[in-house]
Amino acid sequence: MDSDEIMLTVRITVADRALLRQLAQGHRSDVSEVVADGLLDVLPTLCSPDAAFRLLAVLTEPAPCGLTVWLPAPLADLLVPAAARVALTTGVRLGCGSAMLGGALRLWLAQDPSLLADHLRVMHAGRPSALLAA
Image (cartoon, rainbow, N blue to C red; front, side):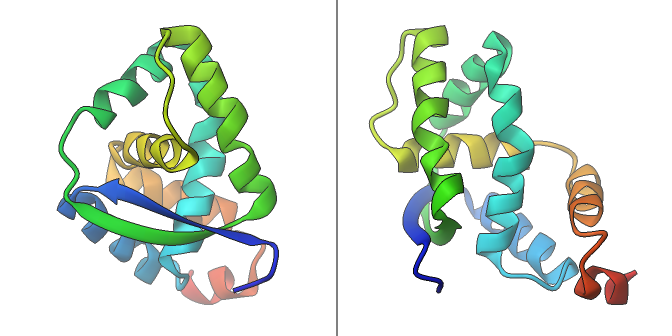
């Protein structure tokens, strides 16, 4: 853990947890790194009303698994304005950064797993470990 990282615990489904582990293993990284990359991929999309309402919809589904991740502080700081944007769009306030993270993560994981793997591959194209995996 770096000193500029924030620990958050989110609720996800068993299938989400398995997919995260699979993505992390496939890209020779840890689950926290995959979650951070997923946030970078999904947060910009939350500006649309459709995405904000889809985020709320995924939060209404049961999520029995707790997952603790470490996020870089600047990325974790983006959860607050993202939650404010969702509240402005939908009229629903998310209680905490963990709820925003959980919704964004579950929304991101709802995509086609091969598309997620491709996005991660592109995001890591310049890293030496990504070049070894190719």
